[in-house]
Length: 146
Image (cartoon, rainbow, N blue to C red; front, side, top):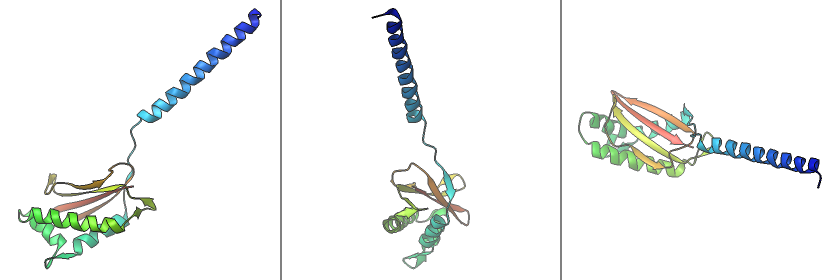
């Protein structure tokens, strides 16, 4: 084998190693980059929240039950009713903005203070459609992940 040929083989080997390192670095960067969550208000989410809050339970609107919780009355009932209604609604809502649903979370707060523990189900990652709904001094926020 000539010296020139041996030098060419070493150069090809070196180039292959550099290419492999670049490819591995690119793959590593994409895997280590956290998923960006895109949140946007969505009329479908707002309508879903409105229908849940305007439905009745025991002769009272769900929104009235939530409002009573903000006055310190019946927060356990509010959580149970919201959880039941949301779970039932999500059995029929399989897509949002044309995408398959992954999960949801519902937060009820008065100012910055949560009134009930967050209601969550499924995988809470990916893009998100949100629907805030004010009830007097209470804010109900539904986040649907897709």
